[in-house]
Image (tube, rainbow, N blue to C red; front, side, top):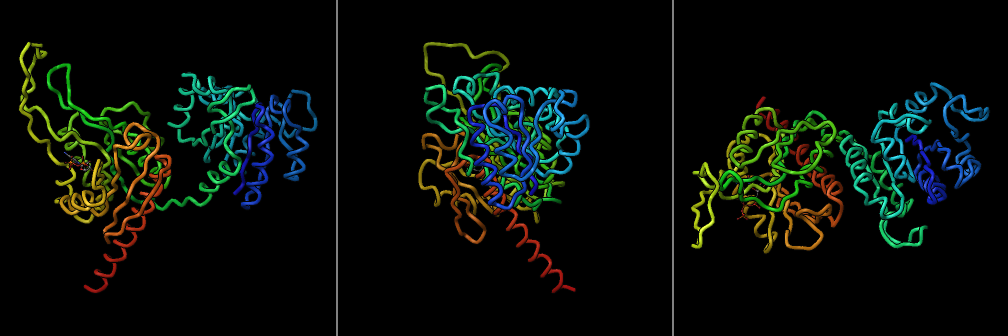
Length: 412
Ligand code: CTP
């Protein structure tokens, strides 16, 4: 793969030299581009010697530098010639520029002209990393489909300990590597993903819900779209941006989720039901707010429709993936749900472990396949878990297609 490495102006710029080596060892060609600030930390000669190529430096044409490759149109050429753009270290200033589409130097202009995958490896002081402005910029870039190798925690150059240290160059290289292996193995599939909780009203201001953040379902939708699928995300109320190339329908209640899913069932070839649907609802919601009294309040709740079980009955040759959130007897409960709801695959996770599952960015799951095998994934970032789930989905799809073809051949 041809990788263009944008080096930002941070103390970690020297580690980008190690990143160049790690990428070369994995067989990638690297073109280095340095911002003006980066040149304050490391000399272009280091990168030129490592890559055997002229390093792109300076600002726009007109900055007086004769020996740079910069010119008014060169960023287009660099954008077209390379398969992936990685920015390491990505400073708070660069992330803000990219998030807002500023284009006042070679790197920011290249970012706008670049249509391939973009990876950021941020590095900065902990307070800058955690600042809402930086986090908003990260979310905007994530929503656009850029991926991040998040900084490590540890001693920072400013003398403090915390998150913000540039990730290990080997970890950045591994992440980049995964892009080069990524196939469009879900092209041609229409994947319907449900995500998030549902909310069931008790009165005009109160509702029953659960702690689902929707992050797992959103990660599945994002990764499925990157792997070539058409993705429709039916989402309960969550606070997450719509992933790149994904269409979202927002719903609130289990009943609304059921309607949205059934309305689009005909188009779907794969359904992944990661939503944490509320199990009970109040059938007659009062028009007015329930008033507090000194006595105990009892409400009679009815079961919500079990969407997954209904899909199990109506799925035809669609591939149906269910989820099971458990606190005990994980595998046993998951197998029971898989059979009861007629799923082709079930992803089970324990939800009573600190730092994993609900609300967290990390997860650890058991994927139960049709053959009854269990595949363990994690603990890892939810995007990584999404990749592993979709690997199993892609394999099962191939197997089911092969079985169909054999049946057809036998009939003719
Ligand atoms: N599910 C659904 N509709 C419901 C309840 C659950 O479609 N009304 C789906 C979920 O999206 C998930 C799977 O069923 O894919 C399992 O959800 P889970 O909450 O773990 O199981 P339940 O069947 O609700 O059983 P319990 O709460 O008793 O564990």
